[in-house]
Amino acid sequence: MAGNSFGTLFSLTTFGESHGRALGGVLDGCPAGIELDIEAIQHEMNRRKPGQSAIVTQRKEPDIIEIYSGVFEGKTTGTPIGFAIHNTNQKSKDYSHIKDSYRPSHADYVYDKKYGFRDYRGGGRSSARETASRVVAGAIAKQFLKDIKINAFVSQVGTLKLEIPYQKLDFNQIESNAVRCPDEATAEKMEAYIKSIKKEGDTIGGVITCVAKNVPIGLGEPVFDKLHAELGKAMLSINAVKGFEYGSGFAGIEMKGSQHNDQFNSDGTTKTNLSGGVQGGISNGMDIYFNVAFKPVATVLQSYETIDKEGNKVTTQGKGRHDPCVVPRAVPIVEAMTALVLADFTLLSRTNKI
Image (tube, rainbow, N blue to C red; front, side):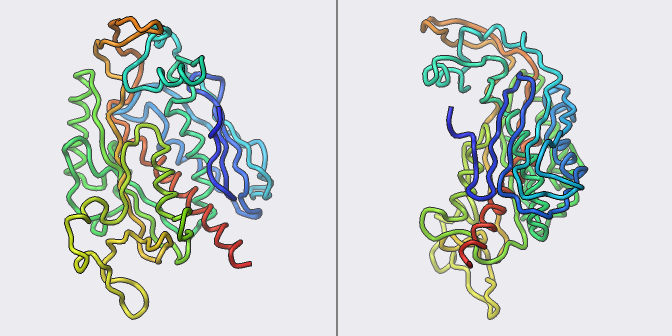
């Protein structure tokens, strides 16, 4: 299986399965001398881990990080940073009923056809639990980036939308509720809705908005390595993501060019920021902001019809511990992937100046 690495200079390779002994990764290219706050890294993991509220999967995992290399006396050495997160609460028997059949809208069928073999326990490598390794690496990337501030939050669950522009939100309120929506009234409605969906044995999708502030001018390349293209790739590599838009996104098609153009101020900033902080594939110093759309979790705790390995129609039912809505736990994942992209382009921009 190829495709387990992400990034060019600041690169991450992950390993492990949902029900294996551990997950982990090797982060290569991180510069030496960065003082790492291990508690801050663990805090990011705690934001992603299962079992943290009534509206997420109740699998209980401590998700304690173990760092094996690349750090000495609290600072990065410049060598590969190896780390692991051990699995402690697998219930593989919850998946025995799908050993010989395929769950609709999961990776089961294509894995079996592509590789001729699959780990049916929680989806194996296709499980969203793989993203735990990304959060560790992203937390390290955040500490490398220092002045760049990355904040993601839930802006939509089903048809419930946060209508307040991000510029008017208090990002300190993101962690004040289980949904991670920085508006109390909207968060309460979202949480109640997710709980009602969960009672039905069903799931619902949502949108995460991410804002990166203090990004310097000049990150990204103008042709194939555009900054927003790499951000799009990063987001679309996250499980359950079905859409990505930055800046004005799809709403921009309803505007005329005279309305959509970001007019300059004398200092090079712009009066509006419909470009989303990126022009010609290169950061322009304005806020980078984008939306990431997540589909409803494919495992529903209802009976459904599917096929087995022989193509026979069979009826089964979803079992186990699953998120009724993935977006609350995906917030730190979106932030982590954003940090990895910006860290990589920061290093690439330095090599271009040599």
